[in-house]
Length: 485
Image 1: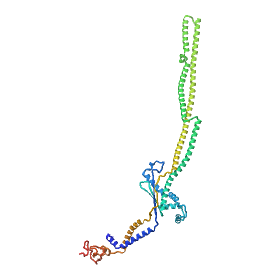
Image 2: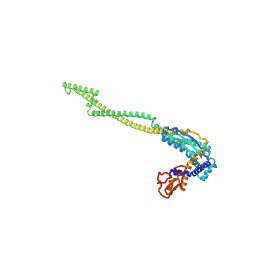
Image 3: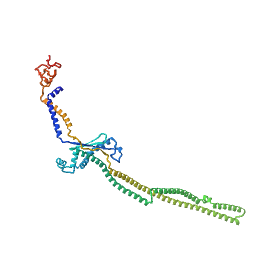
Image 4: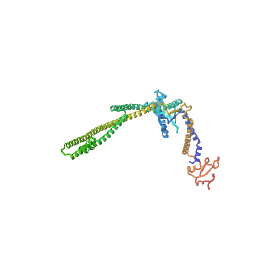
């Protein structure tokens, strides 16, 4: 259908369109007047994201993604059943089991199920929670049958949300406090046991402190090093004295100790002098001269004394070697005992260090748990909320629904569309000749002549069109009122 034909159809059936539009507007106005009035009250809160946790680092929550997630969580929390139950408890919805709400619940569910859960679902449908973009402001609106109830429930939602958000932060802290207190008691017992074990070990082995054990070990180690040095020195002396003793036993006269002995040196000189005298006397006197015999006896006696003294000196070397051997054995025994003692002290020190480490670990664990317990206790006693009330809901002056002007505007739009549809349907069911183009389309005959309307010269639509019995249709551009040549 062309635009011209549509306008002619609408002009011809305008009364039908007006009646349809008027009917729609009348029905809308009647329904809007008969519908019960609904009142919406709105309150606003400010959620401070930075102070969501008073003891946590606020920089961790300043990222945009976390802030958006946090605000979405707060919206879900406001719409949660727990908050709705708190609202019902605050407004007294659950006090009277025979009120209208309970009767409606019984009629709907037959008394099966939980009333508070059913009522929470109904209240959620009437609740409107809208977070503001790029800010921490949340508007909480509630719609009710009367203005006082709407404001009361909206404010109750705000208070329940504040209390619930605080409780959700405090309750885990209280649970953590109980856990950490129990754990601190266990760690305290473990620390006491470790400390008692260390004290018993120190008392049993004479270790006053770990530092004292270190000092004692250093002293004993120094003594061990000193004994080691003495052992090396005595081993050298023993080797030397043993060598001298062996040489003195094999050839005492050539032993350095014998040669360097002053008594032996004196006897050797006296023997040499007496032998020289004996040789001189033998040259003047005969071998049997009493002086020669006496001189020989004196030389023999001196030689005997020299031999005896040499044997004594050589024997003294054996005594010295024996003494060195005994000292060496004693030092070796002392060295082994000292080494054993140092090893024992080292073992005791290491054991004491292990016990001391256990005490330190137990102390560290106890301190950490105690600190966390203190922090949890502080959090559990917190009464500061990060939610601030910006606007308290007040009873609205006007009803939020039904809105007569909005409903009539929508009804006018929909009624206009419906009126056009009705007009087009009627036109399709009862076609009329509206313009010259309808003649060949509806009658399947050529148009011979068109009589112009007396109200507008050269126009088509209101005049009577006379179809011919045959012949071609006038070509385009032929003046109206004339037959084609």
